[in-house]
Image (tube, rainbow, N blue to C red; front, side, top):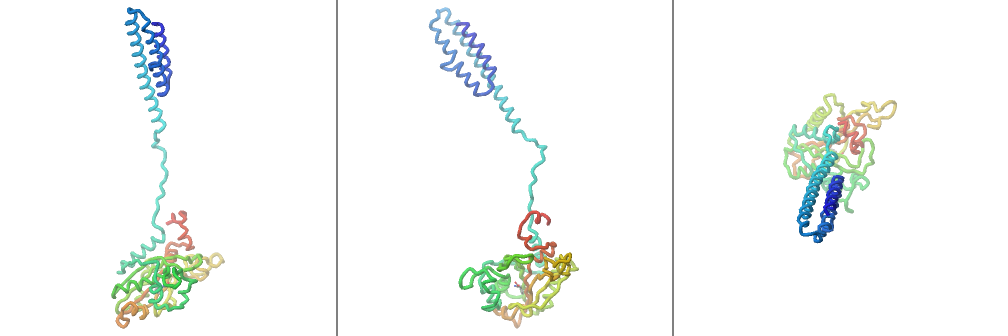
Amino acid sequence: MKEQLELIQKNALAALEAAETPAALEELRVKLLGKKGELTAVLKLMGKLSPEERPVMGQMANTVRATIEAKLEERKAAINAAVLEAKLAAESIDVTIPGDNVQLGHQHPMNMVLQEIKDIFVGMGYTVVDGPEVELASYNFTRLNIEEGHPSRDRSDTFYFDDNDEVLLRTQTSSMQIRFMENNQPPLCMLAPGRVFRKDEADATHSPMFHQIEGLVVAEHITMGDLKGALITIMNKIYGHDAQVRFRPHHFPFTEPSCEMDMQCHKCHGTGEVDGQVCSTCHGEGWIELLGAGMVHPEVLRNCGIDPEKYSGFAFGIGLERTAMGRLKITDLRLIFDNDVRFLNQF
Ligand code: PHE
């Protein structure tokens, strides 16, 4: 029995030394010390020993058990330390590896130009307002003196929501003239930027959705000279003092007299040609139409409860995309809507 115990201890210590995982250790613990383990099996034979031998063997068995237990604890600690070590090594972070670049976005170029324009007008005393894109025909057309049957009301030009042609996507920010005059008495100075919608095919200078900036000034003794002065001042502030613009007579039902203002094409510099080809930005015109304007029609003032005998005013509607194109030397309007980051990152 003494030899048996010595053998158990020797083999156990060797096996424990060789075990390398927590699972292998646990397996050994059961095998050596468990109820059906080797040591227990030997202890069961104690009954067969003589009374003199029994305490001696008993004590020896206890020592063997204690030795195995101590070795088990020692190996457990060593293996756990090794496991932790391996884990730390696997999860270690090399702080010297260069990081992933975070792409920082910025304001869209068109909004940059809008912000510039708003700042200029606010500096001139204008109030900036916002209004609905889904609009009533009465604001978009009727009260702006655009009679039934006018071509701009046509279903081929305007997006309607109903069969009676009463609710629509506004085709111009001029609807904001009525909304503002309804609620404000002269003297007034309003700027209303926003989206407008028309059934247009997209090309280098057209898009079915684009932005306008409506301006309206109504007070006593306002003249066409004030309108020209305001527009030239703003153009000089946006484009610099050599801004090339021209005014042409035009017709709008809600202004009288009316005009349009063009900016010299920034691609062909007014020649209409680039490398012997027709300029694709201005379609060979040499000029790009930027805005419509005029003196507010007396009928429009009356429609808003303002006395045209006492007050007069001017209004204008600037095409924001085209203004931004000139300001940032963009040659195709579609680039503004594509949102290609290679384009956007240039600003
Ligand atoms: N609303 C006109 C357009 O969309 C522009 C305009 C605004 C003309 C104000 C005169 C006065 O073409």
